[in-house]
Length: 267
Ligand SMILES: NC(=O)c1ccc[n+]([C@@H]2O[C@H](COP(=O)([O-])OP(=O)(O)OC[C@H]3O[C@@H](n4cnc5c(N)ncnc54)[C@H](OP(=O)(O)O)[C@@H]3O)[C@@H](O)[C@H]2O)c1
Image (tube, rainbow, N blue to C red):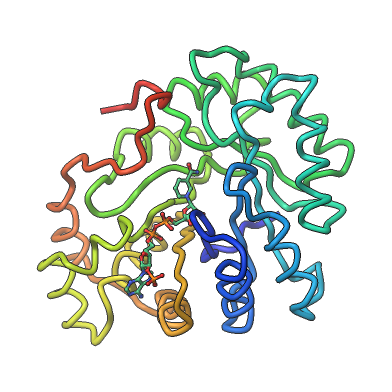
């Protein structure tokens, strides 16, 4: 029931570009692919999966339910549509992409619909994304923390999300760090560059290793084969206590994904 720690993000990537990114990623050794209904690329990812020649049992595919589909009467039908696009009978993980804007659909209603989807075999695991500490507690109260395979949230050196990280650890809820490279910003940071140079590594590898060492899964994206391959090597990098202390100083609450319907974030 394990989430492979290093996955492949696919946000913004469409058509041939996402087919190539996923195909190159799978050839390089990625086995975990992260998509979402709203990305509009599930069918393209389905094409890449169908063509890859890797056994389904070796792949871990995540999709996310968009906010329009969170009501009990809609969630399962929308997941069935995602499965059809992906060409799969079951995804490995289904997340609520965001807390329902304005709490229009109660958390418990969507979480119970996810539980039903899991019981029907449409998804192996269920989880949440962009949930705050309070919302994470609400989801856990509805279905039990043990049923929540992950909370996928933005975490990178410039948004370390410590309150949420501590609360999730206390509740036994695993986290997946999205935008782990701060959408490219880590590559320009002098501290990240210096730590990378000391290890003969890249700042991207340092950012990913920093997250992996905390026990989080990471899902960086790239359109370039060389970057995809290099990012995988983060699994072999071990940061020192001093590196970690230096990265800690970079936290500046610099959130990137912050749409107008976002929840009231934990400071
Ligand atoms: N749950 C949510 O609400 C949510 C929100 C946002 C994102 N996500 C997920 O998280 C994934 C990752 O986030 P993201 O794609 O926005 O940002 P990201 O992974 O932090 O950064 C991707 C950017 O970094 C560049 N890059 C990657 N590896 C590199 C390397 N080794 N050297 C130099 N540049 C490198 C890529 O450019 P190149 O293409 O040129 O390599 C791309 O511009 C998404 O794809 C999506 O699956 C989830």
